[in-house]
Length: 200
Length: 101
Image (tube, rainbow over all chains, first blue to last red; front, top):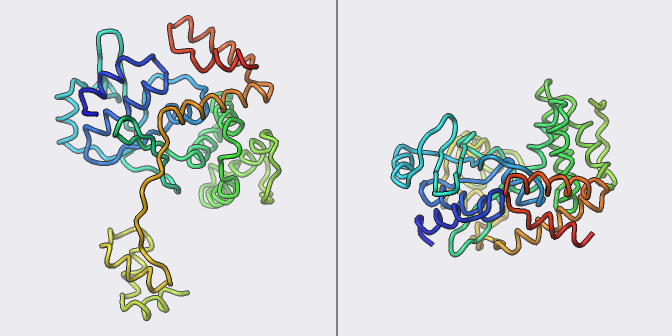
């Protein structure tokens, strides 16, 4: 499937559907030299089936050549987004970082000969837990929803280890281990490691 | 095994091994192969294991169903369905979850 076909599939797909997210990511990936990885709300939708997204978050390097190709395809910059407008649909892509902060290899999804990389569910869980240390309801609910929806696919031992390490090195995130424990407990899974950090 | 031990086994300077370990260099495959051999390992390539769109959709349905089973989902799915319908968004997953619960 070439870039024009990917664009058409992405724009024709229903908003917030798996097709819109994945073909949108595949299109962007096809137009850039480096590997783009789907993260954020779009990744959460593909891992849980639940979520509301307004844009597609991708992480990866973007060169001047990539930017020129995106513009040739019809993307334009609008604030922090790359926006592509069709007749009835708009795709907005944000590149929040040029490097994926992950431990595991991404998941790969094949779409008609094109591969889309999606952040692994354990790395996404780690990201959601870090977001939830801000103690807001929205971020906590997102982390909890992912934990419940994908509890058996998440490497909780890794989550506990990484949470403890992050809390030791980043004082602002010292509530991370307690938060991880509480969220894991709500999935009904027993805890395999005794993180003894105070709850936050 | 220390970096010094590995250096002796591979003939690669410990300082270079340290840079490799910390991700400061982008090593050639031959260098990686030498380092891995020193660790008793071998460098091998394997095809990416990929799912397809149907697999992702099945995972999404399962996730949404689990949220419903956890006692949070049904009300949430119903409210999400209403929220999405008001905006003309895709509601395939929500409808399937509600129909089967």
